[in-house]
Amino acid sequence: MTETPQTAGGGGNPRWVRVALVVSLGANLLIVGMIAGAMIRHSGEGGAARPARPAAEMTLRELGYGPFGRALSRSDQRSIAEALKGRARDLEINRREFRTQMKALLNALRATPYRPDAVREIIDRQQARLIERQQIGKDLFLEHLEKMTDAERKRYARRLEKVLLRGARR
Image (cartoon, rainbow, N blue to C red; front, side):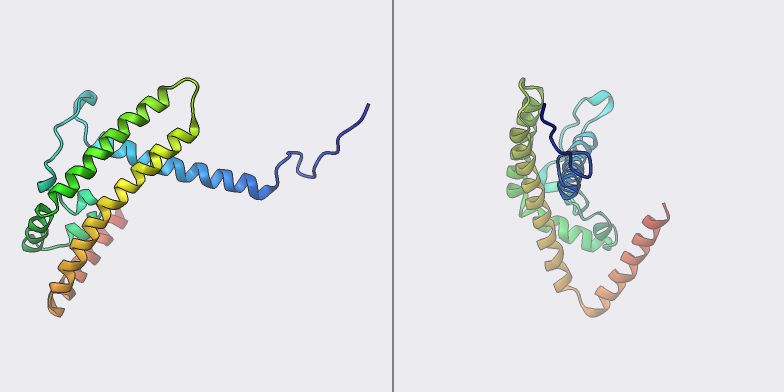
């Protein structure tokens, strides 16, 4: 009878492979958590879906820039909201694609046999949609900052600092 030598760690994989798997799993769980959070945020009581806010009424907060949007003055918020209306078509297309991908994800999760590569591909596409949406918010936000005077930017920085400090205390 021949014995096979065991590696020092007892497993068959080097330590870096296990670390890479844990990091990959953590990143995937983060993405799935973001998607689930978006679904929960947009559902009403008992899981019944609330009607989605029209893309023309979206805010920086809904595009992933919560504290930045909260620190804006009311007039700045209105100005960015108007700019977002100009991008409503892009946002609506993005939202529609995301919903389509969510249906595909649900089908892939229910499929037998389970195909992790298919789920990974769908989640990668969803992440790309989220990044596109954030990019729209980033571009409009940066354009708005560039139009501010030095005094307006300093006032904004004070308000942002207060918003961030309030958030850190929670």
